[in-house]
Length: 585
Image (cartoon, rainbow, N blue to C red):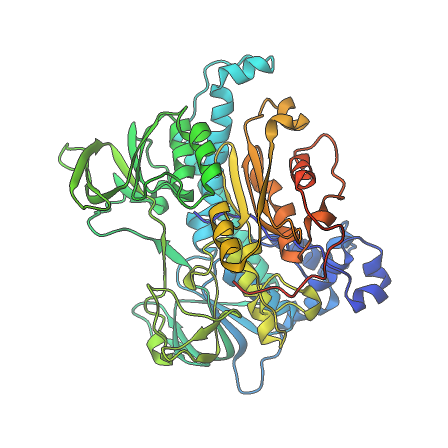
């Protein structure tokens, strides 16, 4: 499932911010003025509080969070559209990417509408990041309470822990409802028009929307964003009934906890659900098509993760096999899974289990968009785009006024990547890199470096990463003719981790010793998802090891894991060369 970590930037004050005492007085003044948000879901509640305070005439107790006059004005009128158009911007899809782009567009004074055919929040809020983290919070607590040895080491005694399945499911559903409501209210408060129905592109600046059985309404827009997201990918031969054979969409409802469940796929989605199910008492069998588990992770991290997250738990696995056929349970018969060799396609084994979760990735949701009306042909369902997220047609030409962000373009299928792509087209030129599309609309040539976008797997302990894996870095070094080195530090040397009796973990740095450039950072350990951002920010801003190693970290904190990691790197330069412009990837 898409991870919900954020891109953060430390940026110099804009000329306006430097001359504005109200901005300079606060260390966060520049971010206030620019409207920069630190998360794909942004700060809906804070925005609403600021608006309500302004409207009532009362002074907000949070002066650093007050919206600028420009934003407040935009909220009241939602901008004035370019002459001849209903809107400056129409966004198809109200997930995290569409939501972030919509709010930022309004802040930039663009009259904006967003079309949603399902419910606001998209996959992340309703069927992905948000409810999955609620379930993983429960699994984390259960693991702590079940770990007698760990508790004893801390001097704690706890009676046999248990859980109420329905209450756990309600926790996940209630969290999704709350965040969905926050997103909806934040857009309404800023004056974004929410148009309900299925959106279809009629032309380069025309979109129609409507509900099934009702007449369509057509609107015109100076620019259009496609932000329709993705759906679970189900391979041929697998019959999904939503009860005993299901995808992550169904699993997040936690309608039951099977005694034995097969999970097809050992990527982020499969790993996180294995964490949830084993904590709640299930036995798990992984079915992986490649020769090793967790194929998308750095191999060294994957090997350590298998030792920590899989081997000690009630998990077995079959690698190098395809699930050729999966039949749901019916008429008293269990779920049947036929396995074949991934290379020879010869029959390999047959599994009989209580349930099967299909975690084979996600597919873009781009059917019915009317792409044929603008001569666009998808590639495996993905909408082709350039580095600015502008759509390209079947002849390789840019389609004017139409952009595509998030899962639908396939560049990086993460919720926060969608938000970054969506807003980068809108941020002011002083923002360097962060969000891509809306800045293009406003005439700013902004490019997002996808190698700086972090990812996380919220298992216990967590895994996080940014940049290249070691094999990818070695391949690049051989091709481009430079040396790479690897530095590592252990959580066992960190005081805070030892205080929590959570010393299992590793941080790994891949870098160029000749320039100090950070090529990749991979972490497995306590709160790895939070720790990765120091590295991702360094890559985004072009900060070199010889500079970041002088940063000061509070003691004792987990952040010292990265502090030691950067200090252990051996670089051949004393001062940093000038930082080049970001390169689109």
